[in-house]
Image (tube, rainbow, N blue to C red; front, side, top):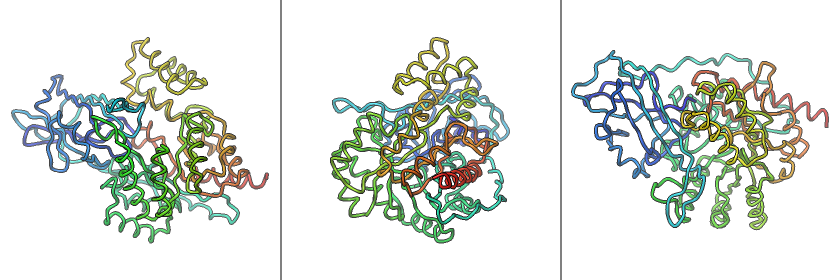
Length: 492
């Protein structure tokens, strides 16, 4: 997914001068308070900040006011206008050189909590785009996507896992408006993917964190039509929603409670949780019991089941001793190499062969994630390469690619409630080139796991829009998982 606020059809006519239809440079909806800064240059001339305004949902905001908008959601499929005042409105067909530099803060990806009541540190996302754009009055048309593929083989009676996907796999296409929500579910059904459907709430709910009655009605109609089942409801905790401070414990509880009730409203049996703070879990457990929801903490790269941070979660679980508490196993934790999709992306962003080799060498060490990340950023700066030109990649290359052993999952197998079958590529031989799927399947078959494997294509974080069709890749990954399951059973 290109790390950009602009696309080729962004430049628009406007009575006040001109406007840029912005695309959210992330995979999920964010709060307007997440926008730290926006700087615009037209034809080499900087536009004063006082001449810029952002219009979302019919409301216009001065740029200086954006950090205070912690209650205003920038929904993933919305395209607010960055309006630039000019003496005369731009005319259709005019061509301009546009440079837009922006910085956003990801409010759920906390690096360090706040001190003495102040705000914490959060993962930033930097955008710096320069494009030659033509003034238009409409967005680009969505392409026609292929659905004529061979139907998948039926589930065998002794298949140990149920298959499905997280709709997160089509993040880039959903963000670009190639699908509305119903259209996305329709195509999943046409390709024979399912039956399990997982969502990231902050991505698909237009009224996030609430589930509206209208959304729940559309959801149920689609499920009745296609025979889907709800597998996992992805809940984030936006601790940094406000810019002046982190959420209080009461705010964390209220925010999470809203998400839990939404999950129940949509029929999910399980919520993927992001926080395992003991006090928060103690307060949430009675609610989970009342709603009959399992709570599964996601183990995601760069961590593994036995990482010190996860051992603390395991200790909390042992203390609380509830059958509702478990884990989501995310296979980003167990990669044997960096994904080709990522390496293509950083090359596009300007890394040469030496830098790409250095990136892989640092990644392969056993140093902590932050230390590896800082070593690589230091290396780039020593070569006079601005790490910000990589956007979030300088961070994501390390916290999205872990290299613990697949066998480590066996240590917590009874507590694994859901699987994110993370993948980035499927090669010409039908394999994932950076993740050993046959070995992972063997570990989970031998360990007695019998739940959902939810395909999660995360190549959208690094691939260009339209570079591949992620739903067709999911179909291929399902073939790989089925083949691996049946081979593991035959060898058992």
